[in-house]
Image 1 (cartoon, rainbow, N blue to C red):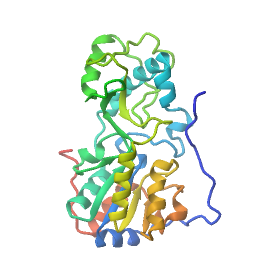
Image 2 (image 1 turned 180 degrees about the vertical axis):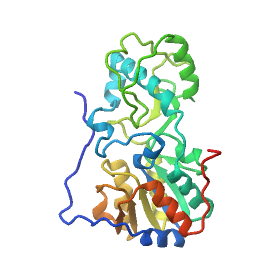
Image 3 (image 1 turned 30 degrees about the horizontal axis):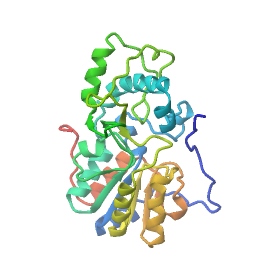
Amino acid sequence: MRMRPTLNWPPAEDPLPDTTDLEPVAEALSTGGVLVLSGAGISTESGIPDYRSEGGSLSRHTPMTYQDFTVGPHARRRYWARSHLGWRTFGRARPNAGHRAVAGFARHGLLTGVITQNVDGLHQAAGSQGVVELHGSLARVVCLSCGILSPRGELARRLEEANAGFEPAAAAINPDGDADLTDQAKDFCVLPCTVCGGILKPDVVFFGETVPPQRVEHCRTLVREATSLLVLGSSLTVMSGLRFVRQAARADKPVLIVNRDPTRGDRHATTRVALPLGTTLTTLAHQLNIPVDDGSTA
């Protein structure tokens, strides 16, 4: 049975009031030692939709699950046809003001690290170093048999050659790089690993798959070493990110959230700023006298 991703959560009995006051976030950044945890909301201004906001992709699209992908060749054909089309658009996305502001905070020594739930690589493209990709990256492909990693661009070229003339129109692009199609994938040619002939999968954590334990432990260490946790654009619906919010709260570290909508982590937070991320982070950078790239070289 196709597993439906988590869409919502039981609301807190005493919800955290949202605010537009940036002072708590500015104070935390000026103190330093901030660990950033980012979600899909930071990339929406780059043209990549999120999952759970009003009109988000989960309202019309169920992402591929690990179980479906590994068991069914028809599911893999559907996924790779949709993903191949989506990659053309997804791969052209560029960092926005929010990504560039985070990179600016890091360059000025205000951050201890960046953990992202996104698979788009936009933090790195904006100049952030040492980003922990909690859910992996669409820029890589992994063989499920031999484990070898290869660039997504390399597979894209092979798929172009094997599927000459495949030019369906995408109804929409999704946060996982997938594209909405109808029944146009039935003749799509899926390619095996060039090393062992095994099944290729994007190097991302699908729904129904677990984040590698060593990656989780690395993130837990980052939380322990941080002074505060700044959550940017994540609903914190799934446990992969929420657990770090809970860890920080248990250790009495301030949890500050910038997200326009309520999140599952609000009950653990000291503040939630309900403002757009790009302008908010740019404003914070200006308040702290931190220059932010204008994006002309991104």
